[in-house]
Length: 379
Ligand code: F6P
Image 1 (cartoon, rainbow, N blue to C red):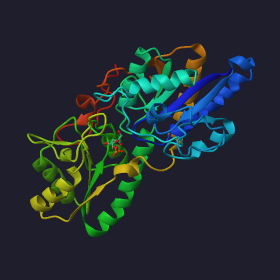
Image 2: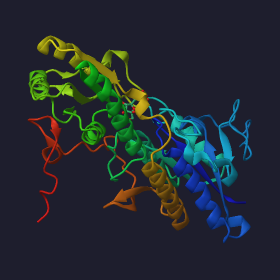
Image 3: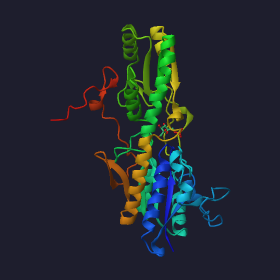
Image 4: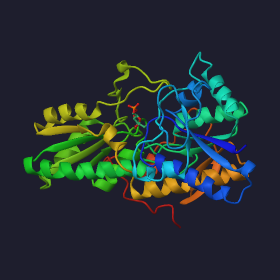
């Protein structure tokens, strides 16, 4: 009997997930070359995040390699041939969902444990952001061998300097701002671009910096609408024909809070749906400046498309690292990045395992800009 490794992708998808899966499978195959048959690894992909192991039933057995999920099947074998071309594809080829096995009042986690036992898994690798990480840790506490790989375009997960998907999402912001520049310049318009990132400003800040946005608004520093108007006016008065504002979806108006769609409800992990700041600023700046303003919500465009070269490499490195951890039997760990190198540390267990922008260092709270002092810590 081989050693079975379950793998799943939880939460919002992002480019880079397939790369990590591919390299888990390929690294397992390389290890297998030196292992006796009964010690070899077999990788099983679960369908749609935690919904996979929750819904797995022996009535619908694990599908053979090459057979995609269908009907009631929630697990499939992944081999080198299956994942061969996955690294060029965005999203996740095994599907994802925001299913929470520990949702209040539910015992769904027991179904995960049941599937783990029924499938005789050696370990489970979960690729995910803050929610998936904390769920995986809880399962570790329930006695399962688990490992994680970090991903989220928000770039806000504790315990790692990099999360898959972030670089591709930053590139999308840059590409879209570049596109908006030509039309904004032609019409002398102000463009407000709403970026994702939930309660953290990493994505808006990195995207705004790389795109050369004139004003960047992040959730960590509530903004004054009148100051945004002042900055935009100064930029237009300085001879520029247009202006680009990048606002994080979670940006807060000073003294008022979120322009959120809280009324629209929450997801299974209790997150409110953020958004609306772009539209708010469009209306505010139109009124305040009598200017021609348009807003663009980048939304899921930031999560779509093929992975950037860095996300391809990071996915590969995280996948290899996860398999190294499996071989070393170091469970309860997350493959991560530390000091610019691939590392491993404990799974960020806390439900509030997000790291926000260190605004005092990285942000100019007067000019609403990425800080211009980057070397200040160097002696
Ligand atoms: O966490 C990733 C993220 O893309 C956030 O930036 C965004 O707020 C949220 O997911 C959107 O979630 P959904 O895909 O469920 O609409």
